[in-house]
Amino acid sequence: MSPYHQGILTLISINVTAVLGVSLLTGFTGLFSFGHAGFMSVGAYTAAILTVRQGLPFFISLPLAGAAAAIVSLIMYPTLKLKGDYFAIAALGFGEAFRLIVENGGKFTGGARGFPGMPHYTTLWVALFVTALACLLMRNTILSRFGRSFMAIREDRLAAEALGIDVVRYQMLALAISAFYAGVGGGMFAFYMQYIQPIMFDIAKSTELAASVVFGGLGSLTGSVVAAVILTAIPEVFRPLAQWRMVFYGLALVLTIVIRPQGLLGFYEISLGGLRSLVKRPRREAGA
Image 1 (cartoon, rainbow, N blue to C red):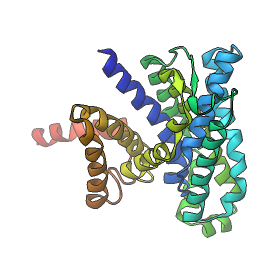
Image 2: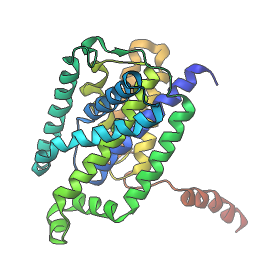
Image 3: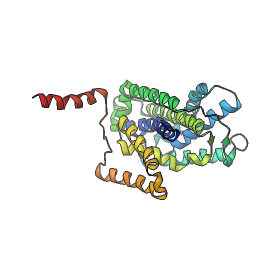
Image 4: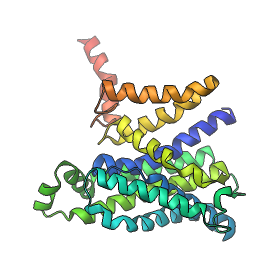
């Protein structure tokens, strides 16, 4: 496999990790976020500072980057009482505010010129390992009592409160977990690019993450993963067409939303058992 293709797969893995967090918050808890690029930037700069300046090993800095993003997400606690579009606007404001803080961070963050000099620690195999672990942990979270509580809040907030679910507490938990995933994704991104700038974590990145969740299907973890793979690969597949590649990206999004408003998979999850059934069904029909 060429280094170019390895790079595309690495970027896909990084985006899948970050999208998993947005999927938990938006798809399973019902809080639409346009600010997760801010959490990615927290993770990226935390991992960079801890590894390059403090000398911590990369594999220790990476979970600490996620933890830093989760802690920073506590700032948004007052916004959890907002409903619908108001939370999305608050999240958008947070993401842009943190980008500006980093941009004006002087020597500590490198300012607008960025933070250079990171070793290439995020190889393809590191990214695949972290992403597989992230998928497994998120699947177990969704299937747990916490996951059912998140979905109950998404379906009907008042009914969930009537059942004794502390809605704001569970929303805060979902936000912290999703921020952790975005922070880990940001940490991997920093050591893949070996150079980070605040502009890499602007509103366009937040929109890309949210679009992947909507594109794949709100309420489908595997749908979000499939969407992150497709939407990351499309600009690379059409790279020879230069200025037209982002047109194809937007066209794919618009067509999917028009043809399948519920997203690629809707609420459907792809599982090994389901795939085995699909393979065995034609054989049974042929035998009959």
